[in-house]
Length: 51
Image 1: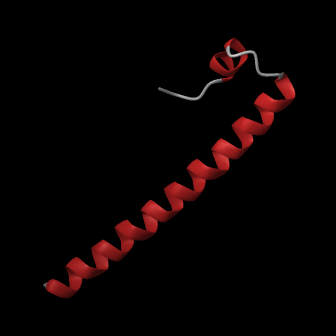
Image 2: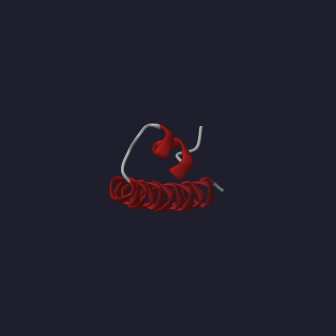
C-alpha cells in the first residue's frame, strides 16, 4: 500500500501534517534506496573477487 496524501487526508490528518509526513517518508525512502545501491555495488565487487 502506498502512502498517499489522499489516504492521510481520509484519516483526518491536517494538510500541514500531511506535508511533514510525506517529506519524512520521502527522506526515509531515499536513504533506503541509497543504502540498497551501496549493498548492490558491494555485492558486485564481491562477485568480481570470486572470479
